[in-house]
Amino acid sequence: MATINSEEHPRMGPGRGRLEGKVALVTAAENGIGRATARLFAREGAQVVCVDHQETSDPRVDELVRRDGGDATFVLADVASQKGCERMIGTALEAYGGLDVLFLNAGTGVRAKIHEMTEEAWDHVVNLNFKGIFHGVRAAMPHFLEKGSGNIVSTASSFGLRASPNYPAYCATKAGIVNLTREMAMDYGPSIRVNCVCPGPTETARWREFPPRPREWTPQQRRDAGMDSTVLGRMAGPEEIAYAVLFLASDESSFVTGHALVVDGGQTID
Image 1 (cartoon, rainbow, N blue to C red):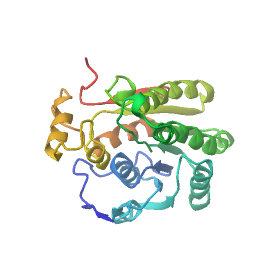
Image 2: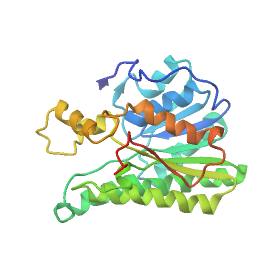
Image 3: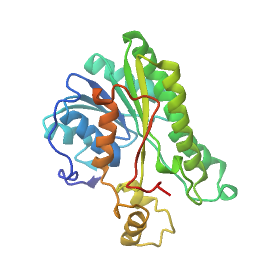
């Protein structure tokens, strides 16, 4: 089990009550953007259901939230499974009596040209990145429709707006999330808002474990690649993406729906 410093999000400030009284669910909550977002949501007053398919961090994300003084419940579930998604939504309803914000963040990628990819690798990326959205929304939507409100945010990517070499399934699924966001906003508005974030290079475990170039690159070379691709000359911290998710999840974005919010340090300018 990896040990992670409890002060791992240095850009995260104290909450201002922007999600006070809300129940939020975050998938892929144990690491990276999901971990930062779960922590930030709790600081902003939400009760948080933290979902992941494995327990990898010490402290686990729900324990980290409680150390911050927040309220969180952990669910071990695979969002590529409909049963897993139904269990996570059921846990939110049972533990907290409702659900207001659904942040579908789980995703992965495999680097290879399409003719070099196995069908198993392609299906793994599609099932987690794209079908996971399908399963998650299907599980949550009956509750949102019954209560007459809801807020869905998904994690797409800057690579859903621009291509990246040797990344076919990832680019395709992230582009699909962008347009699915628009379509669902049309289907479920005005009572339910649907948006997505498109992060650029972000300093997460996934970036370190799945570099965009050969694995013989050093950690510094991987960081340099992320820095060189942005106008701001650096990678994002996961909490910087979390603040964009918070904006979409809060009433501060009450007139925003069907939107892909780009948070990429200027990566997609050209």
